[in-house]
Image (tube, rainbow, N blue to C red; front, side, top):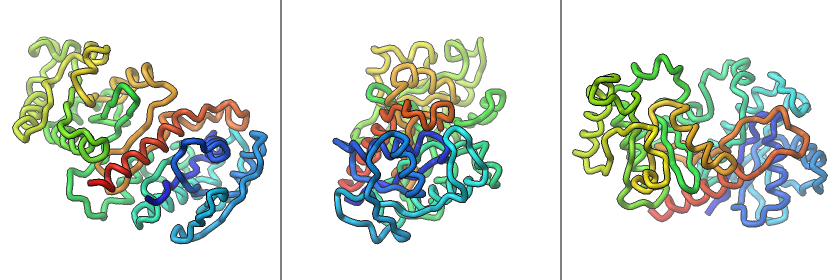
Length: 335
């Protein structure tokens, strides 16, 4: 199987040092190549007190080197040397270019998937990025590729004991109810079910759904979205054969016994899903994009500008993102 492509993220953040550290240690990590600036990676290695990697720098992912002791780098140069903790918009184009090149490598079959290191959306928007984040951008880059199943993107946060998919992602809370149409809930349910089968090897996936309102509306006394939108959409999904339960009060869906009743749960807005996953798996959760023609994961944390360059960043989530992307690619290869 081809290696994973890792895009460098914002060079002023902790992404460079995560890549440098995991490459230097690399016990148990799946094979990956870096998409970004090798000089920046060397500087990150030096800041961590690591030996300078031996690089094989390429401009074409079809020319990856096979030497296990050599770090393959698909070259995307920075416009200016990075300063840890001080993001500079001048490097926004390189950050975007690394995502584009990593995605292109996966689309062309030179990588088995993409793992994206963290970006700062506010910095990228200075370069007319135009997307809320990685999830939507990679969906745009792959939108013309053939895909026989329900097409995402759907964001899932996955840890060892909990998988949470989001029906809305970076939607302001006041706009969430209007965004929850029956069609949207049905689409998310299909995408989640198909991904659990295809990418996680769960033959008969069970799906839970959070209610929007307290007590899941309490039969319409605390809101009607469950009655008018969410549960009718769930009924349509059950009619298609999916094992999906009616919406339940979110405050009762994340304890141990409840989590044993489903393989993944759909949260209806950002914090409803991210609070429980980060409570249970703050260090080792993975951000996964479902419903795309390529595999894409990311560490479930941000750029860490406040600790960048200090050697404090933990690589747990990046390691988990590599392992999950590799496992998903293996599942797809067996399909």
